[in-house]
Image 1 (cartoon, helix red, strand yellow):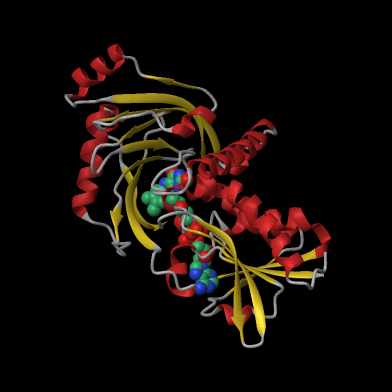
Image 2 (cartoon, helix red, strand yellow):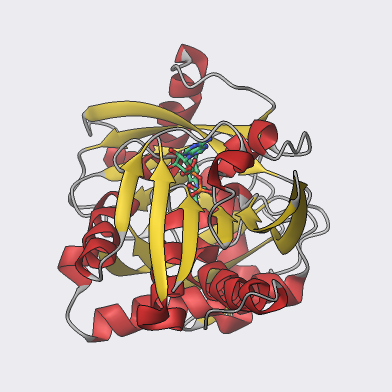
Amino acid sequence: MLSVAVIGAGVIGLPSALAIQEELGPKAEVIIFTDKLSPQTTGDVSAGLWSPYLLQNTPIDQLTKWSKATQDYILKLWKNGDAKVTGISLQLIMALSTNKNYKPPEWIKISLGHSEFSQDQLKYYIERYGEKFTGGYAFVGFIWEPTKFLPYLEKKFKDRGGQIRMRKVDNFAELSHFDVVVNCSGLNSRSLVPDPSVHPIRGQIARVRAPWQKHTFMLDTEPGNYIIPNEDCVIVGGTHQENDFNIGIYDSDKNHILTGCRKYLPSLTKAPVIRDQAGLRPGRDQVRLEIEDRKIGEKVMKIVHNYGHGGSGVTLSIGCALDAARLVKEAAGFAGQSKL
Ligand SMILES: Cc1cc2nc3c(=O)[nH]c(=O)nc-3n(C[C@H](O)[C@H](O)[C@H](O)COP(=O)(O)OP(=O)(O)OC[C@H]3O[C@@H](n4cnc5c(N)ncnc54)[C@H](O)[C@@H]3O)c2cc1C
């Protein structure tokens, strides 16, 4: 039997562990090593909007492929009637831009239906908000709430015989007895790999009570505002502060978030704040999804890296997990010790 260790149980680790179970079936024993589970992971701060964001130079063909695979998976859950238990909602998502070089994003073509705002519609928003909007679009898309789907995936993983060990891994060598190790440690890859190019992109949000708000609104001005309904609250944001490690709350950010979001959607003016939160997105020049051969003493360890998903961990989760599982299979074969 092939032994596989997965480091991390966030929106990248859990789907990867499940995809490996699915790809290899009973031929593999999969164990997750993690120091945090939901609701303590980065994804638990996020609203779970399906929309590629803060991915820097990740190639568009890969980004599109991974996002599409995730969307297909969510669509399947949704069609199966599992929306409630896995935290899915299908919403109208609208985005406005003030970027002088505005172009609609490439990935919009794979959404479940989209349209660009006409000049007349833009004029309406320019007059309504007093901002120089240069373009915008609307699409039909999913919100997939990590606080709901992470516990669901964790149960599925355990039901299939997967084990979870609550502990911090300080060095890959600790897991050198496994055939393949899959690194889904997010921002912590900075010290674990170590990969200094992984850096925090801090995001602060507030959860407010506004059950009447049913569509998502995004603005790409700096520092930007967004409004994303979840089932039990509405997430208002946001910030993206590079290289800021603080997960405490800044009053200035809170003020920016509440003032901005209330300006764009005045119906939120009296919506009470339930909770303020901040999280650190794992920023990187591009997602790292590849096999590394690492020499540990006499042994060459096979490590599959899957980290650096920036502001899009939920959006890319399933697509990257499927590729990570294929890489595990490949790594096990190349190791010359294939037990498959
Ligand atoms: C405010 C905010 C809003 C966001 N909104 C969205 C959104 O709407 N849509 C979207 O797609 N994305 C969004 N994101 C981005 C998304 O949340 C991240 O890309 C994603 O959570 C990263 O997931 P991860 O599993 O790589 O990392 P993490 O969630 O940080 O998980 C890492 C896991 O590895 C474990 N770990 C790390 N190091 C070790 C170690 N040494 N030993 C053992 N275990 C270890 C941790 O315990 C944890 O379980 C948002 C992020 C923020 C902060």
